[in-house]
Image (tube, rainbow, N blue to C red; front, side, top):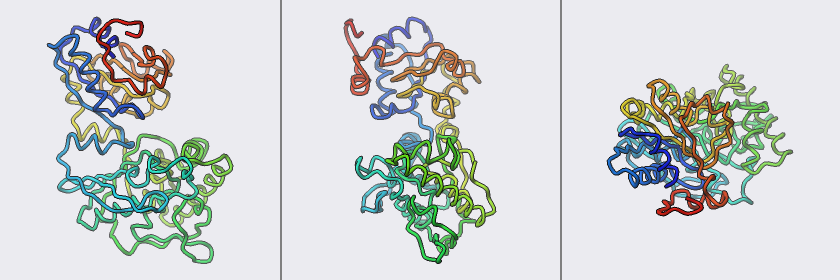
Length: 380
């Protein structure tokens, strides 16, 4: 970053610089990215006013970002992981709302490679967290959908909230991915009054419930599914979509973002009247990002891999739109850039720098992305 920051300073004579990146997944948190870039800038010019504003877009890690800005209380809870093992985790609350990540109880990071199988995993543990928050009196729930190990369309969550999913013989089904195709009817919850409970789901993807760009075809492979299993999940999602429509009179099959977290988005819209919101826009609003961009002279953003998904409501895309709105120069510092010059035009950055340009290889970039090189060298 030392070389990148020096080169950037040569082209920028502004004084107030806002740093608003996403995390570099698998390498650095958004806060660590801010600190690394800020250290590099201040090393070259200590007179700069550097403002750190780590960001997220509703995916895993978003709740930690919000806790940096809001006065939130951490609530510890005993629940279960995606395959039903007891685990300890936590969620946050404000005076009137609970903030819960699907990934904290139903996340892919909780499983070994051998345990990953979206036919067998469930969001039940996340549902237990929501149930506790509601039982404590919180009727405003923010649910962050990224990073799940599941493809159960929210059956696990809603099972924990009192719903039952029945097969053709009226026998209750376990809320796992492979049973989506067996559901024939839904028994509603007698536990909570969801007309009084507001559930807002924050997501960072636009994928529908099923189809070539749906939950199974796009995400099930990384959750451990084989080609054959993906086909089974796809058929299950189609069946479940039909059952949901019969139950709620809402067609969620092609709902934008409905495929998030293994189609939790679609399931909760139909069953709980939950709302799907763009994660970046919500977090931007809650953290006051736009005002900071408006008062900055220059903005730096970034993420681990800059690719086509970056242009679809992710942090960089959102920051770029705000920079255009307020006529602010935007520089992107990323781990790896896979966008063409034409694709970059959508973001309109003044420049793009990649850590991989100066690292020995991708492993080096992932491990040493935040290092400051203090003297010239072949890698500097």
